[in-house]
Amino acid sequence: MRQPPLKTTISILSLSTVSGITTVITGILTQLKQSFPTVPTTIIEWIVTIANFSALLTLMFNSSLVKKFGVRKIVISGLILSSIMGIIPVFTSNLWLIMLSRIFLGLGIGLFSPHAISLIAHTYHGELRARLLGYQTGFSALGNAVLLGLAGLLIGLNWHAVFWLHIILLIVALLIYFFVPEPNNEIDEIKTEIVKLPRRQWKMIFLTFVTYLLIWGIQLKLPSYFESRNFGNAQILNLTLSAMNIGGLIAGLTFGYLHKYLHRYVLTLGYIGAALSVLLLYLTKNPNIAIGSAVFFNFIYSYTGPYLIFTSNKGLKSSQVNTLSSYITISTIISAFFAPLIWNLLGQLGPSTLPDNVFLWIILILILLTILTIISKTQKGSTINDTK
Image (cartoon, rainbow, N blue to C red):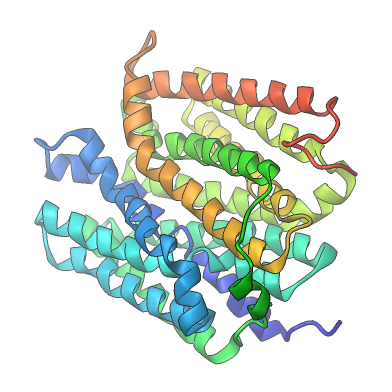
């Protein structure tokens, strides 16, 4: 089967570079708290995550919109809308206007974000699909790393300047417009068949929700954790977040190779490695070790995402791939919205400060997930691990 040209592959993967655009402002959480001292922490953290939740509205209608207008028009429209809404906070210090712009930003994200996966699933097959799904995670990490690195530079001006980075969405829209053709989906099947997912896929969707909830806990609490332990200023934090995504990039690029040899053990490796790195981050008082632990966490944990996506897509029809992609995206979005609530609540339960307690809870949950993946390997027809 003839593969699409390189420019098409790069353009499809470019969509992944902006899939985590909402996290580009994570490094300014401390500055936002200082600018709005009377606003509760959960509300401030929602400025980062609220866009993920509002994306649910357009995600719910994504399949219908795609049937009517096609994937390319929906993706391009979402990118343009998100870019315009993302830039609005550059020009205002009104918290509620900023929050409103972030909500509309999410509507655009809901239009294009699920197709970072579905375009790969529809366009490529076999081991190439596995490699590109790994690359998808890698390109997402690379995009986040570059954007967070740029944010670290722009924050030297003021926190408003960081929002200029949303202009990158317009560049990606141009790439999709010029180089990505409308995918040849099984239209008749999609129109006539009521799309249902097997029970196994629903369990994978729930596991994806938990997996992403944990990484949101690290990202949201790392700024205050660094501040409380004097590990560095806002620029150091942004560079750390950027380096974490470089670790994710390496994991994404090597996922296909690792999965070829380790198969179902990739997931266990991701969970246990993440647990050990967060434990080291919790115990250390050395800034360099803390930064190294954070970077290693994102590296090893980034093997879990493509594994869950690749495994859950196995054996599905074209119409089911679209549905699964939407539900997986929804699960990650819901995890982002509930993360501030859940972690600020659990953070109050423990022996130390709120960020420290959050890290303890994350360690415990990661250990539990590790045990569950080990147990599942002994069960026939495992819902968590695939077979060789």
